Image (cartoon, rainbow, N blue to C red):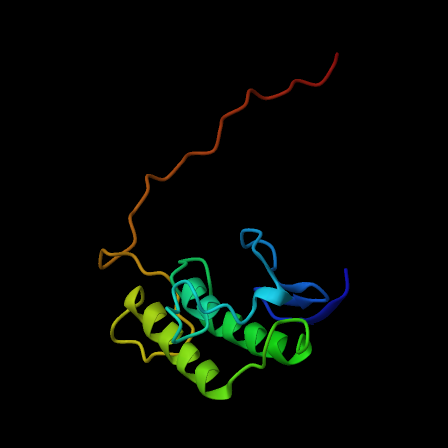
Length: 138
């Protein structure tokens, strides 16, 4: 399968968009890119908002790949991508992603998951296994 564009999490392929390992396998067909009947509720494109709700998704990487896929797959989906709807969908996706991130971090910056505690949990130190010494043959 030909890859037309790729970033660290998403690839735009000849068939649409798909996640890049080690992320879970997540393909989106080109003819479904402009879907607006689900989480977008007719006002936004569904995919940016849908993906912003997933904890494993770097929303900025998805927005980058989604925007490129719209240009590269024009004609494979019904209708034309509306720039105003795209901007509104991206803004809404960033707001959605910010809900699961540090509220002090500006929206749109890469966001890593954080521990709810002040410090990560401390695990007991493991001692290396002790093996008996091998004696040389006599």
